[in-house]
Image (cartoon, rainbow, N blue to C red; front, side, top):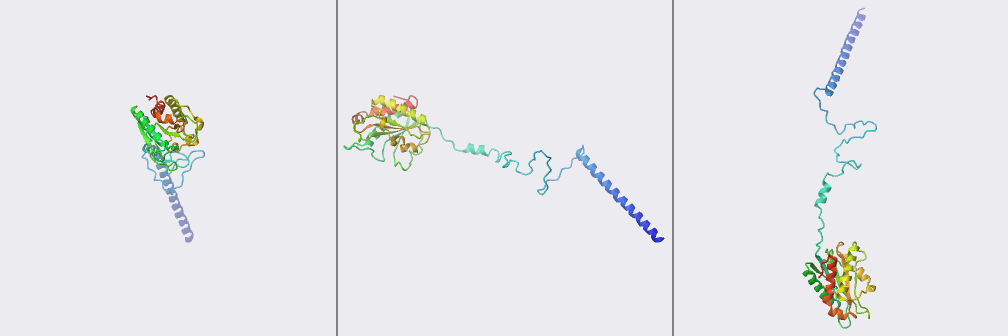
Length: 285
């Protein structure tokens, strides 16, 4: 009988203890719900803890775009946003060295073959370089009198690019030559530009001006049929800056045009200077 009473007492204590535990859980749940409601209402907001690197990624609803979660807010290889620091490209472009504009009054003149070699040499010793140096000096004087800045540029080994011809920039460049003594009966002059020029229209306009003004000054005929690769692929064309219009002129033949090459050097220089002036906008004598 006493054993049965003791069991009943233990069962009763257990029931009381279980009831107390259940009550505690209920109160705890109600307290948590109250705090949740206060966080969404007018009560004080509790700051959420910082997101740790090992936290799981948030669940994104189907069809919604995921927001960036890491420090790479500037963009990524996916193409969202810039992939470099804002302003970096603009800064690089601003600091890049710009090519200065070409001086519209700067002209380059090459006295053919000087000082590299003699050019053509006739049986009596007449040298091409003697003619070209003299005519080039006269062209320089005429152009400088008209307000141009003239550079007399030296010839050099065609296989070895050298300054100042290399990358020369000017409003125009003309190389002055004379034809050989080897073609009996040939008379006249010719003008050519580089066949592979990146500015063929400008070069052709310079050629046309030289043809017109030189013929008017010297009364020599054109001899276009003797234009060779040495003219339209002249090595200096490949060395100068791509934005420099250029032409080469053969003043006449050292054999049959001997009298003109001896007596009309001023007229030859005038024709070249007027051709350049025509090309550069009417600056003629």
